[in-house]
Image (tube, rainbow, N blue to C red; front, side):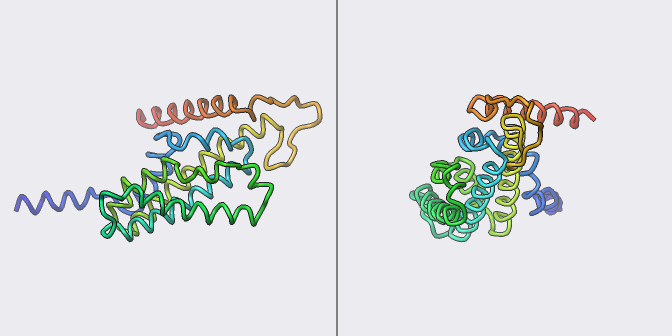
Length: 213
C-alpha cells in the first residue's frame, strides 16, 4: 500500500509537457539561466533582425534534431551517439543555411559563419544528449519549442537594445532625430558583453524578488 502511494506521488510530481515547454522560457532559459550558446548571442545580436533570424534558425535546428534523436534513441548505439547527434544536427543546419541564403543573401552575409557554427552550439547538443535521447517525441518537441523560443527571446532582447542605442534604429527604422549621437560601442563585441551583463543583472534581481515574495 505504501509503495502504491509513493508511486502515485511520483506520478503527480512528474513534469508535464507544459512544464517542459515553460522551463525553457523562464526557469531554465538557455541564455539568462544556463548561459549556453554565447558565441551567436554575443556575435550576431548587434541588430534586432540578425538576432531574431539567428534565434529562429537555432530553434528550427533544435526542434528537428530533438524529434529525430528521440525517434532514433533506441536504435543509436551508445558508443556513437554523440557523432550521430552531430550528423543529425549538421543535416538540419545545412537546410537552414541554404534556406537563409535563398531568402536573403544580405541576411546570410550578416550572420556570416555563425550559421554553420550552429552545428557545435552547445545548447542543441546538450538538449539532444540530456533530454531527447531519454524522452518521448512529444516531450522532446515541447522541450525544443520552449528552449528555442526562450533562446530567440533572449537574442531579441540583446539585439533590440544594441540596435536602438548603437544605431538609433529598430529593425532598420530610424527612431531618433539627426542630433542623436549613436553609441557605436553597442554594436561592437564589447557592447554585446555590456548588454548581456545588464540583462543578466535585471533577470537575477527579478528572480530574487519573485522568490522572496
